[in-house]
Amino acid sequence: MKARAYRMAARAEGVQATRIAILDACLMLSTQQPIALITLEAVAVQARVSVQTILRHFASKAGLIEATVAYGTELIAAARTAEPGDIDSAVRRLLDQYDAGEGKLALLLLAQEETDPEAVATIAATGKAVHRRWVEDVFAPYTNDPAVIDLLVIATDVYTWKLLRRDRGLSRTDTEARVHALINAILDRKGSP
Image (cartoon, rainbow, N blue to C red; front, side):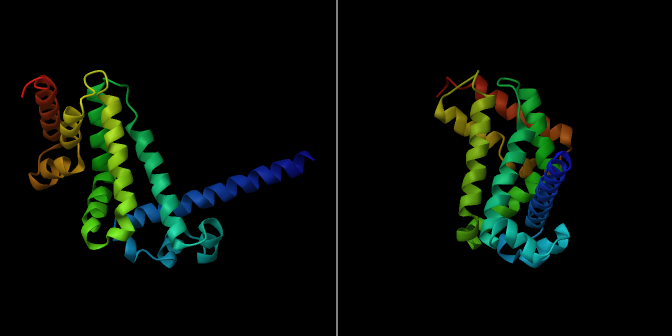
């Protein structure tokens, strides 16, 4: 009985590892091309599985995309975890994520809002909601004013990172300093008109 239980556990681990490989492949492909252009065949090649294996796990491309969004959201939330009020750590983790590829992915997805709204509407809305919740959590000790939260969302948004890091070509250190300057200005003036 123990040998069978071991085999079943090993099989379950293998199934989960395959599922993660497929999700990772889809996530990686979504950083390179619009979602509408991602094919099950391309995901299969990247994950080193068959299309049939993908269909067994997710039933369809729509199911795969939905699962990838949930998986990516979990990864982002876990990587961004910071103690409420620990702004330095929170900003550092956020910029780490943007620099490591989340920024590129977010920009590609947001660019598709206009060209393929059906494919990315839910994904973009989920990402925006996750970012806003993160801001609300991190800055909870300082404010719960929706207007101030709006400004903090802007200060920490991927477009702010893009303007500073990509468009201006600033170093990571300078980008982080400017994001902190924005945050400090917002928090220092939260009671001002």
